[in-house]
Length: 230
Image (cartoon, rainbow, N blue to C red):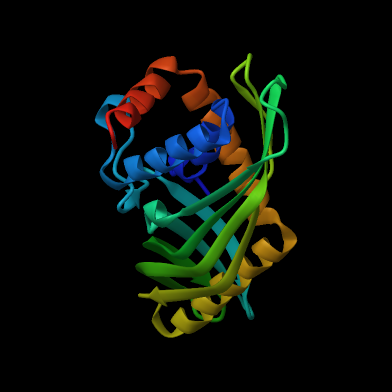
């Protein structure tokens, strides 16, 4: 999943960058606020909602005696700025590597988008429509290790859990309920096995290290926005 929700986890990086946890939490909450309306100077768009354009994910899944070939197109994320942030420092301020444990919580998180599908079976059919995923009581918990001299995340672990997950599909014809159930079941399996957490770790680890921390101008623009009382 190509989350362009960098600041939803960058809040943790801001904590790690700070020499004091209280200061870091101030910056973390400011970064969360930045996702509401965006910070153009830092290249941060509004995440209310967060739109992912030019994204197409293709997959193939079994559906009874048939096979579904589907494409998920341009997902949108709702509820990103509604995160509650908690963090504990497990290292000393004098250590070269700042180590943190964190807990990010969303009461509700919604993702929706469009799809195109081809169902091959006894009856061959094509469908286009919309899908919606509802995540409730979402927690991202884990550890983050940040090397203060190198400005690099040495370790990022994410454990993603949901109390409830529902999938809804429209436009899939008579197979709509089956496709929704298949999608819901597949996603729940991904969370149980940890595949979803690993996917988020990979994407955010890259974006935070290579897109943000290697770009001093972007980071300074965000911190300057914070300093002016946001």
